[in-house]
Structures are given as C-alpha cells and as structure tokens.
Length: 134
Image (cartoon, rainbow, N blue to C red; front, side):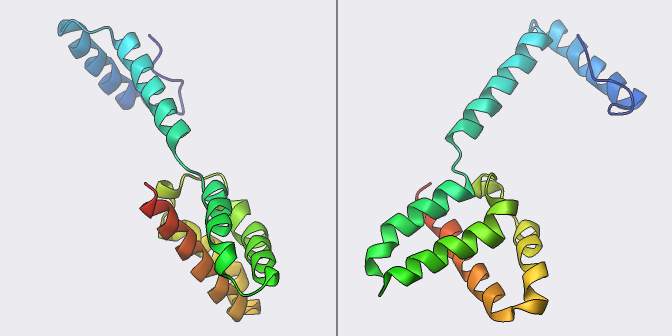
C-alpha cells in the first residue's frame, strides 16, 4: 500500500499512516479497500455539490422575471462572469469561504468601489439561494 511520495508526505506522516493502516488490518478491515471507499464517497459528494456557476445561472433564471428590464439580467450575468466566476465558478457553494470572496473583491474595490459592492451583493444573493436549495 502506497502512503505517498517524499516531499509531499514526510517520514513522520508516513509512519502515522502506516500505523493507522496496521490498526485497520488488526480490526479486520483492508486499508486499501477503506481508502478506495472514502475516495468514492468523496467523488459522489462532489458530484452532488452545486458549483457557484450553476447556482448563479439558476438564481438568474428564477429571478429574471421580477427584474424591471432585460438590462438587469445582462448586468448580473456579465458582472458575475467577469469578476466572480474566474475564482468561484468551479467551487462548490458550500466550500466558498470569506477568503475566496475577498479574492474576488480586492482587485475591484480600489478602482471601482460601486462595482465591488454590486458584485458582493450578487455573490451573497447567489450563495443564499444555493443554501436555501440545499
């Protein structure tokens, strides 16, 4: 069973992993099968996670009928595509933390403070929408 290559896994970490594998064997569980099951569970969880890009599109679809003009929809799509999606687009909504949002806003804030405020509000609205949808 491979534990990972050196510099990525230190000797101390490799020893800890080997000890954990020995404990699993002593308990009657194959550590390789255990690791594969954990990987499959993680892949399945990620497959069900909604990305920010997907949530943003769904939010716009749901709310566009209540906006006063088609221009609002275009503004939402453009600002999210230009500023938020390069950093947040492929992340699962439940994985987005404040530091990621700040990475989006920091470059905009000095040059275009009003745009930064709008982008923040739109990110917040999309994440709230995704949260209510599970």
